[in-house]
Length: 603
Image (cartoon, rainbow, N blue to C red):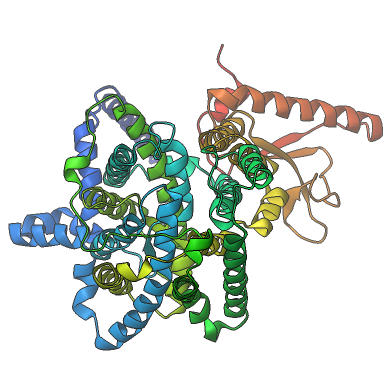
């Protein structure tokens, strides 16, 4: 009995110690909150972004930084900047055999396509070939994708011609137009490098997948209609890109006999041949080389036909002279001052975003098949540097081509050495064979571009987007109709605007679901999606499908919950005379202190 006061005292001492500990903890917490250290400066964060882009993550720990010598740090930087230093040490002859065959196959497709895409960009044919030499070599040193094929592509070529001819007419002054194209390429490379260095790749994501699907489909149709000029041998053609103007120009030329039937016969004959080769290659994977080599065969055969029959004397339009040799320097042609600087920078930004979106989508698609990760920021840096180098060596904007990448993959490429083989083959062609292409008909180039366009139109994906998300489908249709009936700028603007509006709408009006238990399970689902779900009497279960809770949507969420509570309360009182006993809110998407604002909103 005498020990009770002692025990009581010890309990009181323990409570007193607990109170003192709580007071100390509260004081310390207040001190850290009120006297918190300054956050890292913007320059510190930018330097960290650049360091993370080039130094492997395992080299960034404090212990390794202390132990590293300057030489190891420099080598680590070089390995981050040039991935070829990582895999090149283990490169074997067996891989080179596969890359050699893939590169030669790739070159057979790249040579005729590059000439056609240069024509689409309103440039002389050799500039398309130049673009298939320097950019692939730079990417082979700096890029991390093993399968992607670098060079000119149809969409970017059309984009450049559509935007640039509003600044400078290529027919009136082709030299000034070419200089501005090189300047646009330089700006595109700068923007791509900045995006990668400062890890700003999320900006590209504002052009959503749905918007890209619609934009590509619209661009494919516009490109196809523009090829009617070459396919029909039309002399007078509009510079506009919308479908109404293009079709009006075609019908006007047909009505006034400004076209030559032999061009149409020759172009359609080889277009049928190309489409048949494409169909056979898709049906039989072992014959992947047939659609790859078919464009080059078309060029060779059509050139021989025109040369032997003298068809150029009877209205068949030909390429004529193609300047050969190594890429000449174009550094002195960049227009970094003058009245068009702002316009070229704007076009460079648009081209950079479109080119990056296509290249990263292509690279990641094939990387997922091969089972490795593709660093988007490093890809942006590689794309940027290769376009900067290209602008200095008479190239225009290059990116990853889906059709050529598929051929490269099917041909069994192992590394980006296939790009090096392709670039060397194109370079040899520039040195040795350009004079043989004098009689190549323009209609064949048009048929080669037309045969590559079906891959840009993905109807099944558009249908899938419609089934999954109607707002995404609206962005898809907006981009498609904007490119088709207005212009490339309007189509891109519509796509970005609708995508951004969807983000804001989802933030301000998040999805809120009334949950019910699925029969014979302990799983809960949305009652509107699962009508058979069972509601628990007296308990209202609500799920908020948003990772963002803030002042913009707190009031909306509170009002929606209170409305459901009122409706359920009235329904229960009418049927069972019971009331709502509890409201369960599933906020597992993101636990946030702002849920307090929902219950007790600030004034």
